[in-house]
Image 1 (cartoon, rainbow, N blue to C red):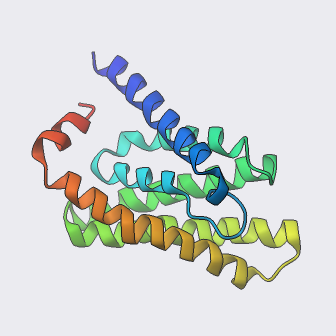
Image 2: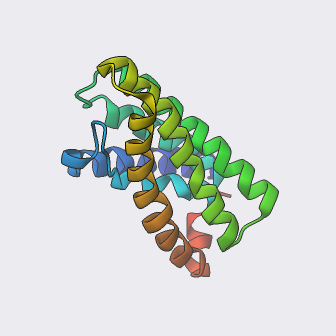
Length: 166
């Protein structure tokens, strides 16, 4: 039962991430991004095994990127690094609101660095400006909005239990 539940949840997370990115495509790509689907990255704070679905979702979402295959590779790698940071923060600081806020900075930093480098390479624009634009979008979506959403979910024991894969 657990294996089929894991596969199903992985597929649902991947599809949700891709669908949200496509739905809000007008603000999901380019240098200034407010990718609503990035809120889902915080789900690994509750259940680390959602990581695969999030990386796959990012791959699917970035297949439609106007930046091409480089965005599939770089964006998905940035998501992978962000997930590692989130899981590490959770293991180090526990399952609480302060740790969640700290963990939410993982996607901000990871995407700012990697996508910032990608944009600099593609457009020959200043790295720090690219990184700043990406960081602002990630901070607004993941840290300001995402932590509020996740904190609300974390307070509801029934939802938390339902989201576990175990």
